[in-house]
Amino acid sequence: MSEPARRERILQAAVAGGLLEPEEIPLAAFLDLDLVAENVAALMRAFPSGVQVLHAFAAKANSIVPVLAGLRDLGMGCEVASEGELAQALAAGFSPQEIVFDSPAKTARELRQALAAGIALNIDNFQELERIEALRTQNPSGSSLGLRINPQIGLGGIAAMSTAGASSKFGVPLQDPGLREQILAAYAADPAMDRIHTHVGSQGCPLPLIGEGIAKVVDLAEEVNRRAGFQQIRTIDIGGGLPVDFESDEPVAAFDAYVAQLQESAPALFSGVYSVVTEFGRSILAKAGFTAAFVEYTKVSGGQHIAITHAGAQVATRTVFMPESWPLRVSAHTADGSRKTGAEIGQDVAGPCCFAGDVVARNRDLPLLEPGDLVALLDTGAYYASTPFTYNSIQQPPVYGAALEDNGDVRFTLLRGQQSMEALLMASGKGLHAAGRTPWPRAITKSGTALPACLPVPAAVRRSAAH
Ligand SMILES: Cc1ncc(COP(=O)(O)O)c(C=O)c1O
Image 1 (tube, helix red, strand yellow):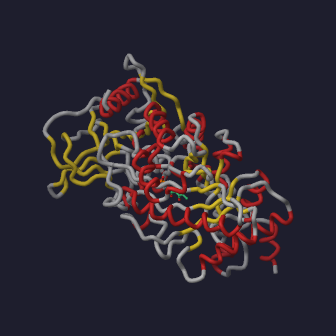
Image 2: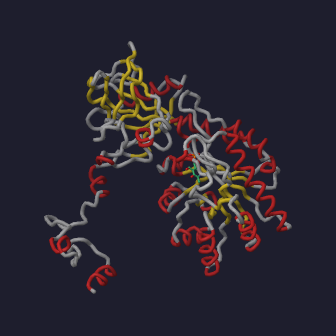
Image 3: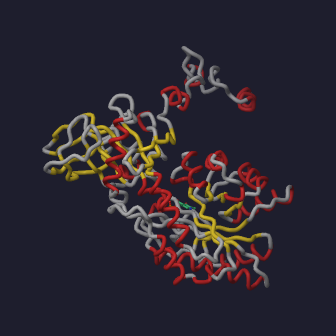
């Protein structure tokens, strides 16, 4: 079945089964689980069989716990970049050995937790390294440790997603004066540092640029090992960042081309002496997901047809704020999920948020949308509904996994429930103030001397306020 036909079938089954409903559930996200499995298998096949590889899914791309658990079942590891993502990975069943911890801002608490659990750490900078060395002196750890290197080979097509520019905030800059020697000295000082990491950037970084960045880091690893006189660096973490084609319907990412590029740019990576870690996110899930929303109203304004739907900046944040960098395909459907036919006309597909720029597609040619129709935003399996934006306090939509049977039936799995109004209120601080009292007593707004009596202020703050 073609990809558009699969999506149509899933949408029809979802509407028929009440998983999408104009009043109660006007917005929902779907993940085609068969396509995910096919894609992960393609990733695993692409790497040479003689090389030990941990494919650590980048949790930031979709941190929904059952999604992570499914990827674990398919044989992936997990890359996390915060205490929250670590908790999600552990909840999904990953063992510490299957997890890699990045982040440029790890707190001492996060470091202690990772070191105690034996989780591999990609160390962002020398200050973090010093902190880790001190913690290891107090409590020895079995964690694999290494520096994140910024090869400084330039930006890709989306500056905000490129992490290998001259002044990126990530990693230790390799080409700044004296830094290569400082990196080599850090490895020489601690033979337990047995890994090295780089991530050139995400989306918009062409394969030759990714290959060039990884080659610089492989070359550095070889130099560390030559100087050490033994194979000190055993693991090279090459990050993620394989771009996704947001214009076509090819569900399997270009993993073969990626590996071919590395075989050309950095052949030593595949010599068999290194184990390799990858951190793909978008290329694993983006193409397998779509987000469906009902059209609530339509209008013509200044001659422009506009459809107001329930999918906007709250689930398509990057697309709304950076439309040139993150354009999305949109398909039009009737209320029962079938593909809408008819003459196409340019229409703005807008979201529900209260700001004028909340438009996911401008003047897009589609059959004329009417209230009650559905739109589907395609290729949104990563970094969309799973990374919501809470503007206007719109409930987060449910996320469903879908598996198609040979007879056309669809089996759905709830991956994340629609956010309840109570959960939304709790996330908004409900319950933290005494009923009927404002948290800003006159005393604090006028003189600034008193703390609000109705807030649960920590004892230390209360003490210092009293002085
Ligand atoms: C360190 C690191 N690894 C992996 C990724 C995943 O990138 P992508 O989803 O483009 O594969 C990111 C994305 O920001 C990242 O920062």
